Image (cartoon, rainbow, N blue to C red; front, side, top):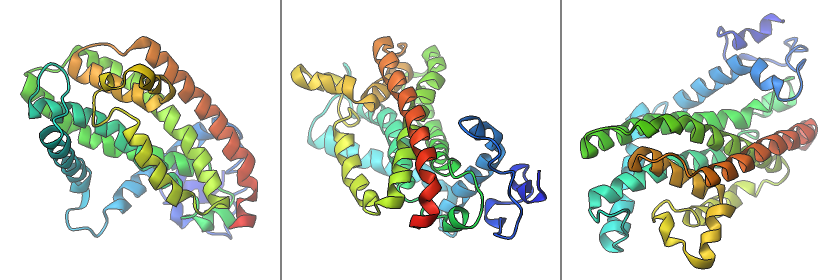
Amino acid sequence: MSSSLQNETGSAAPQDLRPDQPLSNVEDRKGLISLWVHRHLLGLMVKRDNMGKYKGSLLGMLWPLISPIGHLLLYTFLFSIVLKVRFGDSGSTSNFALYLMAGLLPWGAFSEALSRSSTVVLEHPNLVKRVVFPLQILPLMAVISALVTEAMAFIILLSAVLIYKHSLPVTLLYLPMIVLSQLLLTAGISWVIGSLSVYIRDIRHVMALALAAWMYATPVVYPASALQGNLAVLLWLNPMAGIVSDYRRVILDGLPPDWPHFAAYTTVGLIAFLLGFKFFEGTKKSFADVM
């Protein structure tokens, strides 16, 4: 493989690729296997993306911790103290904050990834126009980068659970299964949004409104039990509702995932992943012409 692909082995950054470099072998693997082939390049881009987010800011890498805490305090005050929303048997504000944060973390990663995917291809016109580059890893970079941010804030949640409950439940072992389903769902939708955003530049503005509506259709700031009667169908139609609920079950309630819901949102995530990748692969060929 050409020396210009050294960035896949760790010696060069993606931004160092130039139009005059021979990159004929970059796309020699097609389909989903290309994600594995370019895993090192993907890792480098995720690292660069996370470092670049906060470069030059005063607090730097503390922002992934400060941001969720800020949202936690705001929503706790509004929904627990003002609106008197309650989770579980305990009506305490501390209990509400734990359940709220367990819901905010997966939702925050999902929301951040979808928002980034609406601009991530447009942010790299040099890679689209001048270089034979595995474009399918761009939306995936946004997805994994958001999960890395979630993981950093997750340390705060586990510390709070340990302080509040004096132990961590063994059901945390189920969490990687839920995160994998979340990854499949988010990646699939991100590929679709990343592709459409090239042709429809209004997508990023639509996403802000759509994500706000989606959040309130998901039991993030209120318990899933609040969705009763005809509204209960949202728990099945909205895969993020099941994911958020299962985060709380395994982290706070000491229960395994709700297996029917788990099977439902995992199936939706897998279908979204496969169809989203296929859609992106089919549309990326004309990105350079449109941009």
